[in-house]
Length: 341
Image (cartoon, rainbow, N blue to C red; front, side, top):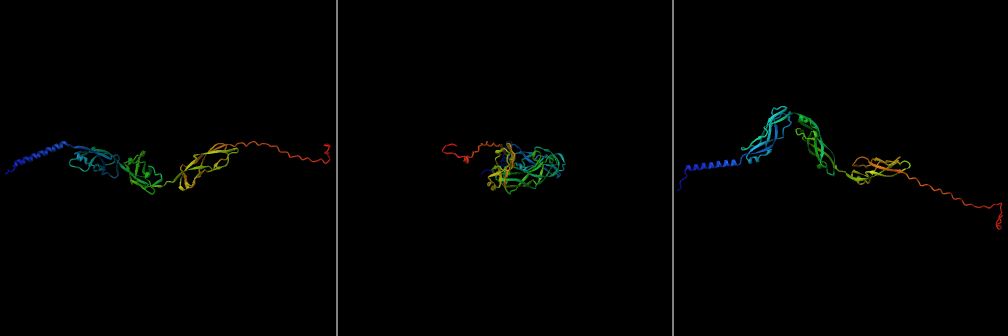
């Protein structure tokens, strides 16, 4: 029958196993040292009074993390925030300590790259400004855009006093490629400074407006020839030898039925009275109701004038004399037989 192991042997085995585990851990730690990772996180200004606003606080700061690779890979920038505590600060330039907060593990160390940052604080300024609609993109060919209304048409702008002096306009951008009849659009507003550059430190209330574009079906378009209407005559001895329009046809747009029924467009009467030489005249057109010119304004007509040709010389023909009728002399008696008196 086998004897039971002695207690000394059991203890020695346990000590050996413990030493082996400690040695393995030491080797593992030596082979996988702590690594570093830098993450950009948003910066908040906390506990700031309602009468002050930061002017030049950076929107994000860098946080340095140190720890095992697995923990570093698990860091999510969205779960971390850097902040400064502005309790009791007054207007002016102030240096504040930067801290970070987020989900922490026992093996993870962290600190902000900048321990202290300098921020300028300004008194709050408010001003009401109108909203202008600016278009971009290309409208569909089958639609017509006739401007847009916006609601509300004014917004309240809030920002640091030094920044508010640079506000030039408040803009709502409308993408014409998306417009449709009867559809309105919720559009964020932009606060613009010099050179139409956005001012990120200023805020609008409300932050977006509703734009109501005036959209309708595009009118029919077509090209129609021009025909002249004359009035008067050139000077005596002169005549019209020809004319020329520039352009000789006009682009009209409007109601499809009216355009389809039109073959020519007449001019307003062109006055020729007294003309002695070639003349160029600006002539308005008689555009029918329901149509309009794509390019407004008169057309140019050049009238060519030349002297009238002289009439051919007339040929004088002498009158034909009337035939003579001999009458017998009653006092004379001829002797037809003798042939003489």
